[in-house]
Image: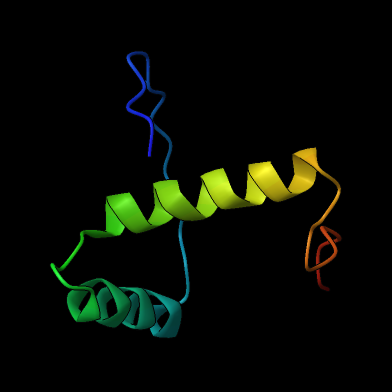
Length: 63
């Protein structure tokens, strides 16, 4: 992943089950990775899919 020189910080709240699953995913990587890396990777992947109109899911909010 490209290292950005001017990063922006934001806060997001997620369900406990999602948090636990992300923690486990990070621990299971070899070598283990932190949550910040996983989230940056997920955001980059989402933006790249959107750029080429290949999103695997709709962006509409669920009720």
